[in-house]
Length: 56
Image (cartoon, rainbow, N blue to C red; front, side, top):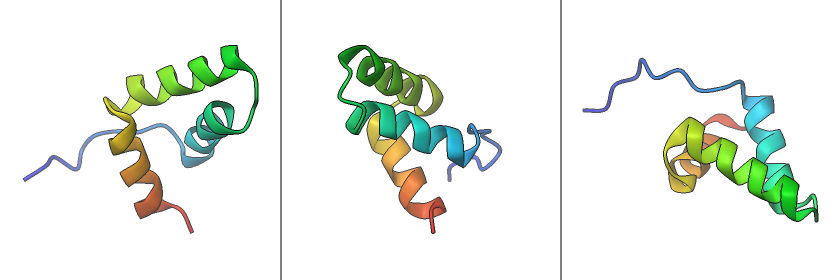
């Protein structure tokens, strides 16, 4: 069973990183957004799962 005590960044910040990675059109911002997500979640897949479970 996975620990639920993991603290993730605020949802709005995560959404900003996703925007940077996908929609910014700026390679430097894209790398920064991707790296921030990986640092926070370990993998992009976990970040994506978190977003789909926590966004409206």
